[in-house]
Length: 295
Image (tube, rainbow, N blue to C red; front, side, top):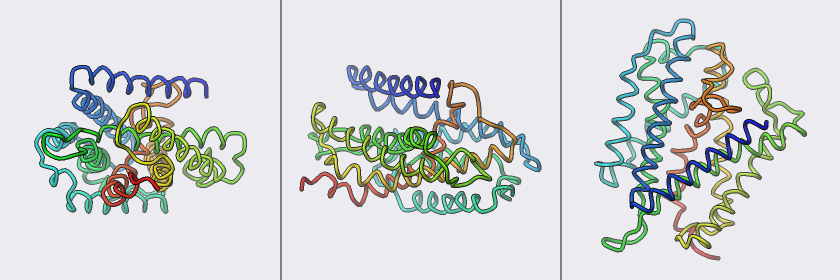
């Protein structure tokens, strides 16, 4: 628990430093993209390592990592606004998300697509599903020459809403968790921890919105509305985390790696973002105007 807490604090400090230092040189978005791309690439590599240990899965090709980075790079630097958040990408993410959720019903079965096309599967599971963060990151407030890049702060909000669900799950689940949510997949997760995670996510999201709209002076969501918007994201982060546990159990592994003390590898760090990223893009696309209005 202590190592996990220290690692979590350290990671948030790194994110803050990247945004803060990058802001001095007007490259905060580009620096944050580099950090995200590095994290996704590392997670995809770890997923391929897990896939190699799953019986019946053919050997994945590292070219999938290159393809993943190329997708994120192209969307970030070259794609027009409508190209970053179009119905094809979101439709594909929704379809693959439904497939991932179906794994929770039969956690002992290896998906056919993973067995036959592990390289494509890893591409779809990580860079494709997380590509929604690029659309969020490139959001701007205003018009033409007066437009201000604010999407980066909404990406951070998605991470806050998602990852503080994990924090609340530990804080409430360890001392109070009695009713297991998925004992065959992740014995440590409980309904009490899930409820605590939802509450923690809402509170952290409201606090972040207050910091953005107050001390930082950024046009952002109203804090109590940011808390409401965080709830579906927090709820989706729970099965998203369980899905990675399915892959780890199939591979006979406890963690995807040992890079981050108390957390594991890069995949262990961002597994809960797989389902929440597309969902956050949909929420922000349809509900952001409401969330920014006072009253």
